[in-house]
Amino acid sequence: MIVETTIPGLVLRHAERSDAPTILAFIRSLARYERLEHEVMATAERIADTVFATPPAAEAVIAELHGKPAGFALFFPTYSTFLAAQGLYLEDLYVEPAQRGLGVGRTMLTYVASLAVRRGCGRFEWAALDWNTPAIEFYCSHGARAMKDWTVYRVAGAELERLAGECPASEPRNVLETRTDRYRRPAVVEPEAFLDYLDVTPSARRKAPGRGAVSGSVIVCYQDSLTRWVRTAWHCVPTGVPKLAACSRNEEGSFGLMAGMGIGGPAVVAHLEPAVAAGVTRIVSIGTAGAVSSSLSPGDVVVCEAALRDEGTSGHYLPPSARVEASGDVTDLVADALGRAGISPRRGLSWTTDAPFRETVDDVRTHERNGVLTVDMEAASVFAMAHYRSVQATAVFIVSDLVSGGVWSPRFHEPAVKEGLRTTFGAVASALAE
Image: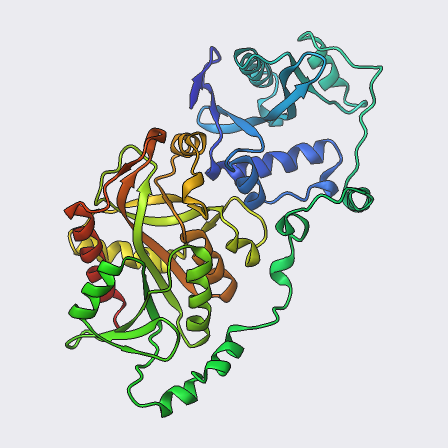
């Protein structure tokens, strides 16, 4: 959102995810001024995954003077028990030295104050270093007063870990909340060992007549009706790897088909892991999804560029973050293939969940406001596993039902959905065939 001001050439705008590097640069400049640069641990990626998470950990406003970033304000909600009301806390307010004295800082401060009033906040607060006389004078000139009877206390780092470790509560806790590094830990059973157990190692498969070779590219298919159509349109033979077939027709080359493993992140990743260990390096997941965006209709095709991690499987493969990206190369390859087939896909963000019957009305509306296109059950899990195993993965969805606005409209059996699945699969298969 762009906010015009009375100062010539100055506009304010609410920051977006792509602004994370700019915000980080401002944070470092502010830290240098405050002689605290050694304490800055933030990265652009962490800013993107927290400030622009769903829900966001904070908000940021960027001031632009004659089209160039001149400063920023970062703030987040607080709560007062005395007032029984929300407040706003201004974490950072910074203006580039060359743009100071022009009213940029005052404009940002008063704008965030106006947000506090519009949101019904009872307080607008911030902290200032006791030696920073210019900042203190600036704040006091705008009606702020120092809370001299209050002292800020902080626990961080090892002290925070130690304090948390002293908690006597026996309440069960989510393992992913307490072991954010669990993805680095060795597993008891690796997928290679599972292939050994099944006797489907490369050497064993070569000795087994009738088994197809494992292709480097695999299409994951969830709908039984689509799987049946694929098996009539292509010649498919088992590879020995569970649920993985080798498919080919005419002179097109071959690709892998994974089907019949069920739905949801845990099921598909449990089957993709042995396939990757057997030689798969590119994964394209093709299935149906619900439309979160009101701009989508049944049969529309969506190429998933990233997925929100509202499921459990991805936490076993990656550190905590709000989302996980698809692999750019295979995503572009798939989008190009769809274009050649006469399909104009939408590209964007999907919300991956383990619980289709707990897609709450509030969640749907929030994701729709934040530009999420679809809701699915596998993408974040598949992308996370692919990142961990250093292979490529993307996903393509055909809209089969609508949840936009928090109202469900099932359209699974409409002809456009069936046609979308088949046309998409054919285009992707031709592009991946080796």
